[in-house]
Image 1 (cartoon, rainbow, N blue to C red):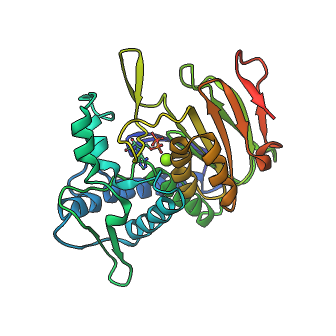
Image 2 (tube, rainbow, N blue to C red; image 1 turned 90 degrees about the horizontal axis):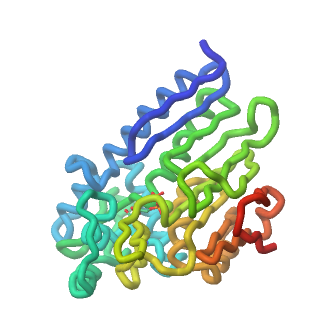
Image 3 (cartoon, helix red, strand yellow; image 1 turned 90 degrees about the vertical axis):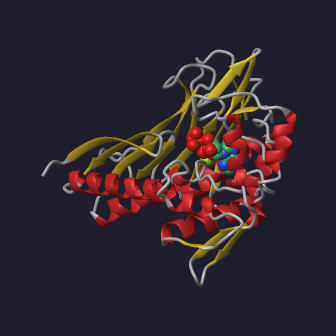
Length: 320
Ligand code: ADP
Ligand code: MG
């Protein structure tokens, strides 16, 4: 058995990379791949056979029995909607569909279309019966989209599996949702790059040094439609139905659990710097990096010792 194993998988609409050290590395990687594919088949908005699609088809009609995984993610999603005053909202589906930002049919909808699709959103319309293990959307036309939280849950699952296989050093990246177990094999912290949001992928403006942490970034550069000199990106403000315009171009959460990091990185992107900082400071075990369209970088207090700004990155200012 090899001591190091690296695996790339396409799933959940992204490339998933695992780097694992230790005796069971290959077995653990394959098990994680299998688990992620299982989660995708349960949670995809696009697969007709997923439990999420079943809930969506039964909106306004019936409660649908779901697996423990889906039940857990929906309970957490509702919690993150509440703490973020609705900035994070998995019922954004009808609005996301209208914009089509994740498809090849992206377009700018009319105000009328946006106003009417907003009537079919609202996290309070998700009714969960935990004793029956069932979920219902209250109105016909409503839908759930776990695109902003499922990868975080999958990252947590990956780390659980590594532990079951006695791995003590591993890295997993689900398209920007990074999570690390332990240190690097040489005992030093993992160094996770924070992308320069103004440049093409993989050029970083800083790095977070991390041990047993998750680092999740939401950015306006990931998927977007460019029209009339304006960027229409894929993170929507549930209050307006438009791509959020809060003055931020990238937000990162550093935490011990990836499900919350994924949800809150999306939420603070919508909330903006001031409310975002307040939210992060009100939550246990969360630190954040905010990058504004004015090229300012703001880092919460508890993360300053682990965030390393690359001074040579032109134009960006690290606000201490
Ligand atoms: P990514 O998955 O691209 O890294 P996010 O985690 O920020 O980025 O999730 C964005 C995805 O979540 C969108 O593609 C859309 O499906 C959905 N979404 C958009 N806006 C919101 C929102 N305010 N709350 C919850 N989900 C959202
Ligand atoms: Mg997210």
